[in-house]
Length: 283
Image (cartoon, rainbow, N blue to C red; front, side, top):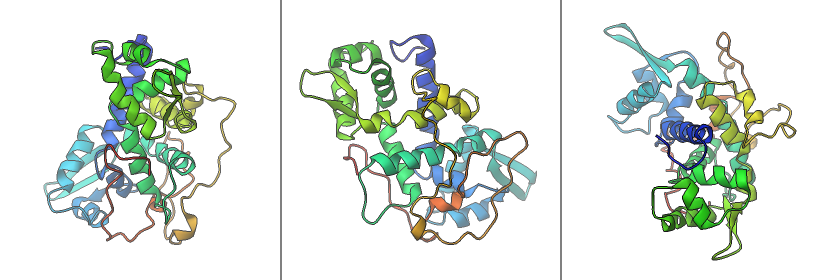
């Protein structure tokens, strides 16, 4: 079923990316995915890594990640059950440093600097606003669009004035610009900077290698792909590495040049803050 008035290929692309974001955005999902990096773990071992979760919260989270195909539950015996990434879940992890790089370049700076995991959570909150992906997609492909034209494309079966609440939110979030009431809308520098993130999510959700992100028909930037480099967020605040990276699975490329533990720069027992609340301003 079409969700926009865009061509079927674009409509399906947006739907897949929106679904991918919906898998990882719910609170704690990214942290649980990172806790599972490495060999499969028993439930008690995972609980020890996400000790801020209250009793009874972890099991439904694991079940939802299993249902999404990102985590696999393996029952070795009735008393020995482990959880680990599926190949698809492991393939999604390299998107996370792209999100952090975007956040560090475009979100308002916090003082003191936030750990990378919180950068991810704040960014996902912005990207999962209602109709956000579709609006950003249209503005990227058509540069400047009026509110009425956007409404016909993004929500063709709804009253056209319903486009303005999500548009105002995207302007407040700093992803969309306009010169004023009645003027067309366009991507801000921050919105345009989402190209690597949306391109990678599109490639992953379609089952393609992330390297294809640079060739995305809307978000691709084949001439602007940066050379691989060491990536660490808030390096001065990170603990010294204590373990070697997990081995790469057979047939899987490894664009990750950072350790998943680098996304946490606070004590493991500290209860993390929530991401920016829905409707909140840029940081």
